[in-house]
Image 1 (spheres, rainbow, N blue to C red):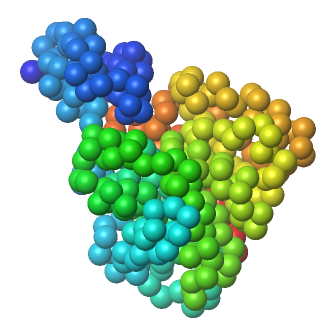
Image 2: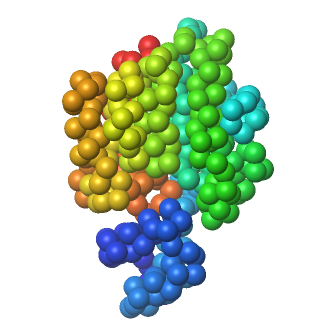
Length: 295
């Protein structure tokens, strides 16, 4: 069997994976369509294995990293799912109160990658909170397929309330300085945009390839925005021109970056959609932005 390399995979395969990862394609149909690209000794099974996330091999900050205090907590979401589990992380020896960052997962619950991202945010000098919107259904089930299925069963408005409640919880933490930002990916990017329209005191929002709010809600935005988009992500990017126009028309503070030649999910280093250069640049811009707005 030939070893699969990213440069040997056509864009159509990544587009198929995007449809599959966003519940627009059933697993059986996904595999059937993949079979058309299983050539030259590459099997459907090897393609599937190549495309699926490698959570344990890609962790950057281990759960027991001595530089951090990291623990699971529960907070109340009375308008949402009731009680929500989340990962709370902060530097182990912080001497001053810290800005807070809510880290919002993709459409499959709080998986190991998003926990890792939350720890990265804490290591950068913040107190981070990464909620699991699947808590009312038992939490992240250990694999993304089941996670996507569970998340599709939750009421979207209730999930939004869970992240609004996360803001209130984090703002009132004794180690937090009261300035709260949010960073989210895919579904979480949409949540970051939503929170900017719903929370007047939100200090900063950073959506990664996130769905845009309706134009009527843009005037409600008070927080400065840093928006990251992937040039090959045609589905999400369709909504950007109208959002950009509304932000400009309402004189909102925002900076947007369109990263060339990268796919939706380019920041996620557990899948082959990851682009190291774009991901590292986007994350540096994110941390610099939070350092300016939250400290």
